[in-house]
Length: 230
Image 1 (cartoon, one colour):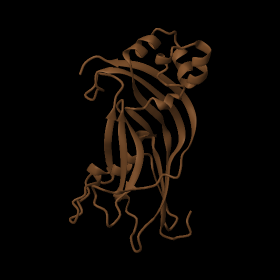
Image 2 (cartoon, helix red, strand yellow):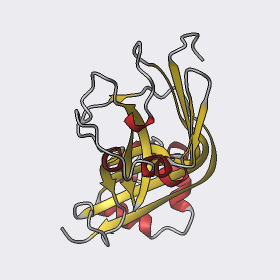
Image 3 (cartoon, helix red, strand yellow):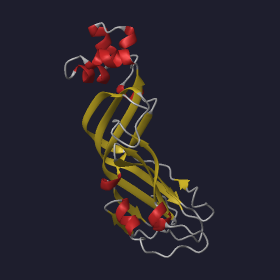
Image 4 (cartoon, one colour):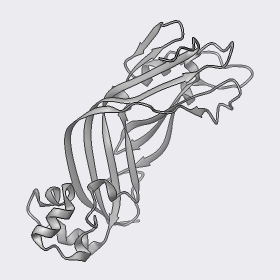
């Protein structure tokens, strides 16, 4: 930790992972769909060697000798499942605050009075969804009609570690924390955190630099899917 006595650190750990979603052509979708189970996985995990060893037609190599994480023109997200995101906050006086997840922290302010100056409501605005991404058409947020590749690497460990200095004479206020999420197939994924500094508008908090990220891979999967209607 910094020698500065006005330093706050935030450590967020749990279960999560890396998610990608990208477009492919109908021909590519149909080509790979007929392969036996496991062939798409082998290709996506090592496209360069797989294409070389199996004489895959060039126009069917949608990864273009790259990795599974490169097929991401629709979405590329890395984060922690919000429900499992364990939070540890260390204050300048070395006091430690812990929460099972951001929901527990947010719920403390369900009946709190609004700040008369900003009218900021932590209960309504502490967790902010910045987007949705779904891999099925049975949802209110389907992708446009087309063919897609998706992959997910499941991981466990530390996803966010932020260390920041508070302005002089400013006392840390946990209600000023903001958690930005993306809804991935109905699961809120925490991707970044921010803090509403005294000079910030509540609508434009300062994003905290993530200096962490130490996870262990648990599993990996990839799939193809088709959206058939607009």
